Amino acid sequence: MSVVSINLNGIKLRRDVQDRTHLGDFIREEGRQTGTHLGCEHGVCGACTVLVDGVPVRSCISFAPACEGKSVTSVEGYQDDPIMALLRPAFSKHHGLQCGYCTPGMLTTARDIVLRFPYADEAKVRLELSGNLCRCTGYKGIVAAILDVLEQCRSAPAAIAELRAAAAKGRQCWPAQAAAPAAFAPFSPEDVGAASQSADADNNARSDGAAFSALGAKVEGDTVIEGGFTVNYPADQVWKFMADLPAVASCLPGAQLTDHEKQANGGERVKGHVGIKFGPMSAAFNGSAKLQRDEANRAAVLKGAGTDSLSQSRATGNIAFIVQALDESKTRVSVNLGFSLQGPLAQFSRSGLVKDFVGRLIQEFGKNVGLRMDPNRSSDDPLPVAKLNAFSLAWSVLIGRIKRLFSRS
Image (cartoon, rainbow, N blue to C red):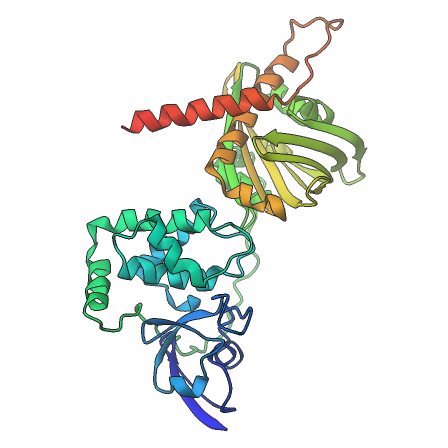
């Protein structure tokens, strides 16, 4: 047995452990910093990479007693690191992660590349990444994320320049260590009574965000897309239409209801199918959902879940909408879509292109609502069926992105 004392993410960690205890196990079991992942445990995959005195090492083949007195930084210790502050959003933007198992080690290695090779090209980045394995992404997104951060760092902000200068001189450099947690401050409980709740009709004037939150429309960790559309009909008439689930489903491209049940508590439960095809992404989700209404605010949220029969990906999410009168004959319908995906399709949910695609779907939905509510339509005329034209939608999304690109220049 050996007494090992290290500085882990700015906090002194001292434990009595076996001589052959690996650093990765020491960090996870004794330090409770479980962001460090152990994969091959042979120093091959790179998932366990951490910094020891600013230098990347494989924690699965490094012995804890050999790190006595050293500073160790795991993925939890980069709160104030300027390079990691750029890498995290870049990995998300370029889909540099999927299952996430390799991500802690990949981020540590990526930081080292940005630090030591400010003018690295794609070939150099791929060479330096060769010690970190990823079974999901194919590396393209990871490489793109690192090149993106390198481009952002060309101007060398002060904090990044200081880290690079230390590396160039051969000195050890590591991120600012996290401060030790403040001591617990005792307190005396105070009974403040129940919060008052007003049923005043003036609640109709509260903001979209407040109404969405009250309905539970925004779920922590979900991808959230906000949009909306305007129709030339009175708000009460639009709300009545939007509360009719079969009518609403008929306006949503690719959606089809197979079962509709009104419940005793005033809610509604539906089962159905949603088919989507966009470039390489094709999905056919079957699932169920439940509708909750807030009559006072003309707001509702549809919460549901489903499974794609093609890829077996699972989706959970909610669609919330608020109907607001702009004037006596014009109404704005604000839409808040929150969702999360698990499985092969999860990588697509982070795409900016897919978010544009969903925004376009909302606009198509608004057009269909306007057509369905047209009072001049004869009862004998067949209503248009909402169909998903993947080619036209994809084309409009691409044209929109090209226009925005040129408008910035």
